[in-house]
Image 1 (cartoon, rainbow, N blue to C red):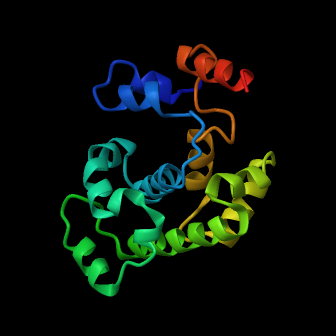
Image 2 (cartoon, one colour):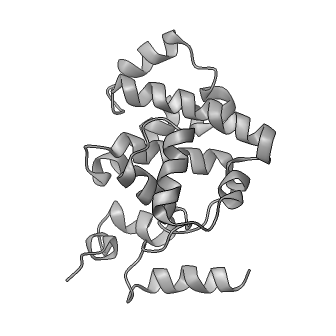
Length: 176
């Protein structure tokens, strides 16, 4: 029997609100997409609960995930982030986020934004998404890409078949 995030999240004080109000819902804004990708990257090797508990600190540390600001982070900013106990202090992940912000700025130039770039490649199988993300971004392995795409509505599987939130998201999709 498969275990779904829905099962873990139900009634949980941290997972519950994220599951009910964000997980699987389509996102369009660059800052929100960048935040979700960043959180997935930061979660690698840790629990999603750890990342959700640190989310506010991540937002403060990374300028609310404004790609234009993060793209200009300097070595001094990297050192500031490495000293910030409120976030995950992993230099490779931090450098990946700065690089990925720069990539998103380029997507604004070439596609009008991150969502438009995603749309230009949608739909495609998960394996093709993975190749594309590995070629485009840093620190984007299979689980990170899968969770990012499910969590932002580009791949199915964010919610179990009996989850009312999943049904709500599907109804929203049908109205477009």
